[in-house]
Image (tube, rainbow, N blue to C red; front, side, top):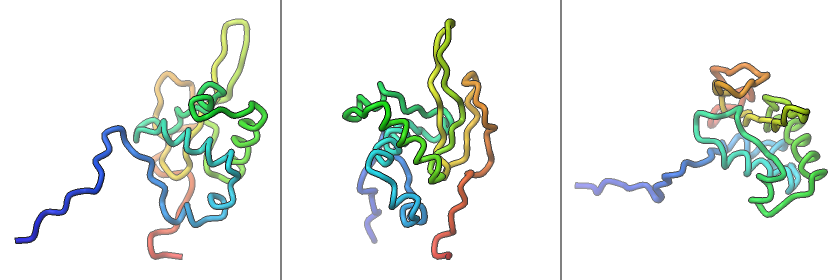
Length: 136
């Protein structure tokens, strides 16, 4: 009797799926190192049901080794231009407080995020269309 194959790794904290068609696309492959670092920081927050409620603040990036504010701004803009993330909520500062911008990864559906005042509706399908495996 064949032995049952066990998974190589059992991740309890979740994982980020990067589909091969995405990784093979120039939008992903040609992204700057800073943009990739921000993308990984956003992906690290994704738990399978909070896409749209991901943030990349100066504090977040400090936990990832630091990043100058101007570099962070440029990386977020690049990721949006490359259609790797979508801004789901605008940041603001005012007398009553402040709130950070929120983002979604484009290859997953946007999840409902109650109480987060998202400016983008949740979706049933991913905003970014990827070719099927083995397809063109």
